[in-house]
Amino acid sequence: MASKRYAAVDKAVCVACGACEKACPLEAVRVHKGCFAMVAQDKCVGCGRCEKACPANSIKMESRVEL
Image (cartoon, rainbow, N blue to C red; front, top):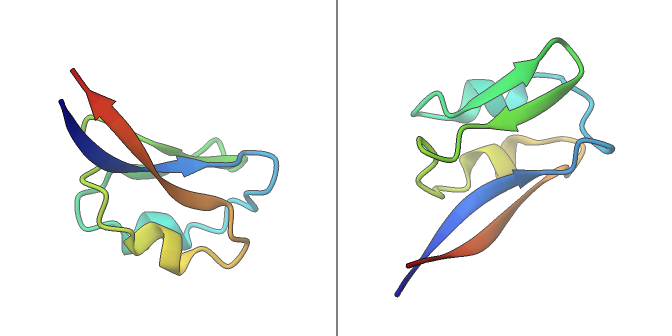
């Protein structure tokens, strides 16, 4: 089993400013319908750039266990 970090968005806290979307080098983060950010888990490599760019602190890096 290998662990991998990924970005998780708290939709209740997200202000949909788009800072995370601009910060992601792999275009894994998109603002959905102007309401909140969503992360494409298949594209996210866990670099943490979106988390650092988020002014609302709505993105946290989490660990995922892959089987």
